[in-house]
Length: 76
Image (cartoon, rainbow, N blue to C red; front, side, top):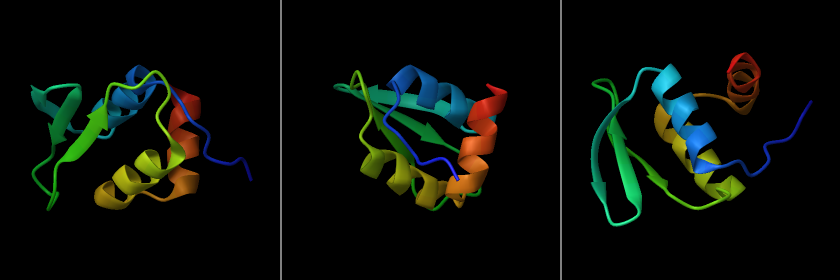
């Protein structure tokens, strides 16, 4: 099974929008996304490469497994 690797924040943003989140606001270099069924917002820092721990934390907030994430990335 492929591993989660660092990706650009723009690529992760396209994933976030694909799964139904919408952009709410930006504070400094952090972009905040929201979906009605979430308990917390999804926060994406505008780093050239997002570290794996940030990707995993946001997947946990979204309730998406690593396998589902990789399959969706292949579609984008």
